[in-house]
Image: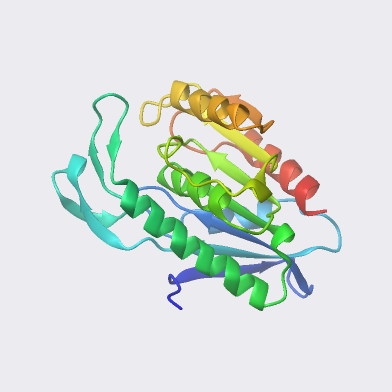
Length: 221
């Protein structure tokens, strides 16, 4: 089975791992991008969590003049929202499924596994979490959108899966309307996502980290 290379952190150190968070970076970044946040997350007492921050492969990205950079999928144009390569999204979601299976083999129950993603990584989170055939703990969607809302083959086992959507109200990269559209798409599928907005651009802020911490504590407790 093919596994993406990744940064892995177990937190708090010394505890037996009973939960996992697979956290996907945005376009042009890598798995090191969100690793520094881990010590800032106040996790439930007694819960050992393995954080997995995989690296996306480097591919040409059309909207960046074909420049080769880490990306979960190609963005071909921004017309009408944005035109993306859905086959690459599905492939990347399959790689996430492989990481989930590896966590299960390591002894973590699927309903103790969270999928998280920022921007492009969040788009993969939508696809990977909703199409996975075993009930997960939740999905965390940061400054992102839901490009495969019309094509995702959702497994009914995920119906009502806890979801937290966070978005910057001043985001010029993924405008907040796209985040709200993702929320509406989930609601139409029978979900009740939590939605939080912050006065920031395409970034992460301290209040958001605190909210993520509280949400993780709730779904992993």
